Length: 424
Image 1 (cartoon, rainbow, N blue to C red):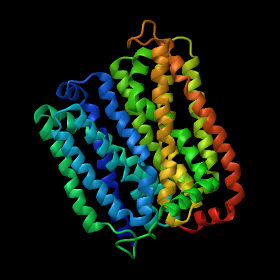
Image 2 (cartoon, rainbow, N blue to C red; image 1 turned 90 degrees about the vertical axis):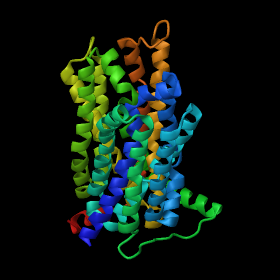
Image 3 (cartoon, rainbow, N blue to C red; image 1 turned 30 degrees about the vertical axis):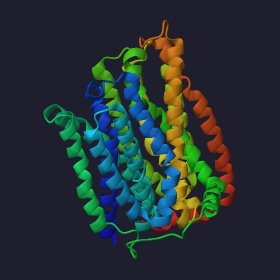
Image 4 (cartoon, helix red, strand yellow; image 1 turned 30 degrees about the horizontal axis):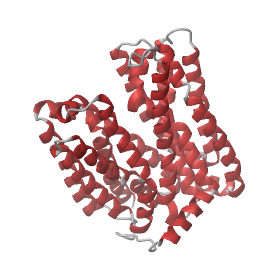
């Protein structure tokens, strides 16, 4: 069963990796997109913001679909939807058509990660689940790395339509792999939950949200992820160049180091969570406190912060990405299996909600603190803007501590630690 479990996980991981590839493929096509659709920079940014809003908004519906129809069916639908959406994006010749295509890319993307989490929880022994979950999140992000060089080459050598059609074609091979390899559990190819009416859906979601462990997982995800996401998504490069007077090469190096920190921290945190499940919230509080402390040192530094301090910043902020995955493990141990995917969908909204709030807040404060408007942002403006993180950290830390206390009242410590000892 071990070989079979790893085979199922590898196929699921590849689908998630390709979803991240499609999500990130526009990052290297910005200039080509502005020329093809004759759009401004703000219109270009709308692609990313809209895609993230759709992704976050789809989490609970997708979770309900997985609980009802199983991971295999939903993952296959997501793969086909991504393929069709990228094909539409390849053929789009107007801005509204391209926006519509990216909406469907966001929908297909949203149908991958929760499915893989459900497969991991079904196929692997309890103690291995945190590690495999971290590996899923970490290795899946390689899709963003793979989207850079290959798409840059394809756009330069083949042009817009052939490059995106080639990217879309990957989904066809993955759809075949899903059909041939995946099954929902070791004993069932298709695992179906009970049909759910609207009252049943409300009852199920209310039951998931009512458990303090689900809320703890939500606030863990909310508090740990947003700083890294805001830097990698939009504001990292301008902050390092304009706010900290670094060269373009140094800014690129810092963002690369953040990705490496994510990849290194994921397996380590996965092992720690599996070995010490009672202390998951303590790990999150420690990670977030460290992030806050290093950000404070950078923002309080007279003038530009030393490059070494910025290296420490991107490393500790990068650890926040894998730390957000701890929230899913708390949700897993707090909900019955039939509600696992919908609870994961609730939790997965936390970090993306916080990230969207931060991205918008930074932009608003930068415009407010920039003399005369425009995009000539000053170091002072960036310091003001980055201080908006403290509001989210304060809210998140209070809520994590609050629901940590509530969760510990209803979760059996001996049971959690017994699972950790029983299975290697």
